[in-house]
Image (cartoon, rainbow, N blue to C red):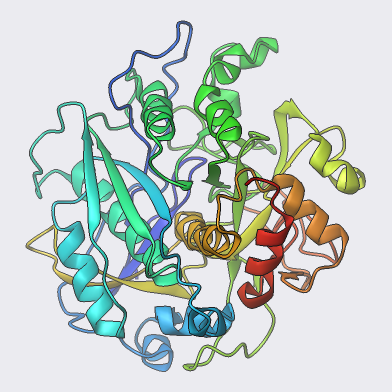
Length: 456
């Protein structure tokens, strides 16, 4: 069974379909038209997983036991996730994300995103929702023979279906960009332009970003000049002012990440942006161990199979005030991740896609680009419960952790995010650089986060 390795400092989307574990590309917010500020870099934010293999013969989702027998991995449905994260009681109370909007931005998008969500929803007995597609720039016609486009379509599919699985009544807006992230393009400024446009026009309560670039690859980094990163923060600063929650995947290279060539890893600990940005909530990865009902058969561990949950210290940003309570772990710099959700390929999520007519059907996806839209759904639920946007959740999140709030669930089984020969960090009691404050019990976390938010 060939498994494609996860790509660069970004959220991985690795898929299993029939006899293969395949890779899906990562999402990247685009630029809806404005011109980026001067002096922004051409550093590329690459899809998390390069390589894409789909197989036709999975006509319907299988149980975890069947997945174990066929491919030696566990595979989970949204119904299992709902049990694992204690979501069903919230739904019974009417907390479903109704009235709230999740913004997802991907190069090219997927021409079948609505149809695929409808099939996905029907399969698992969920209500579907209308996906609004916003095209930014001159998005080319979709070509299913173009592996770059199908990779992005796979990421779009994953993002939409995972967000919908958690917040079934939330609105979803997909912003398609015309620029894929390749060397020499201005993809990162376009991403920030797109997000700022959406924020300024009141579209979206939470933005989910499954992309990133290793901090070390930005111009000036080696000389200690971080202006090329800091000049790109304008969308996040705008979101902070207008109380829009911004999330980013912590990446899939463990404590390291890929170099500018997109193929080789740094042999030292590095971090990636925008996950490392203090204005962004960094979402890391766990491995769930569930039975077919969704009950845990053992505690969560760190995602570390065909990729590993990103985490560590930023080399650009100093420790923000909200992490003062964990300064003994993060030191003088910003630490990631902040919180974690399901991301392991062995324990990945069933998704449905039909954008490639030669590979229509069901596969299993993992990576922190799964974890991030899952958590975006959690934030949408908290927005609804609060009756307003919870906004930048960083202070609230760490305050809940410090108060030992029951909705914050520690991940402390001793597994780690070592990867590609670079020693990572262990999941230990309390905050750590493998899973952050841990994961969530949504029934308790959602109302606690709603109460902790200060924005009317």
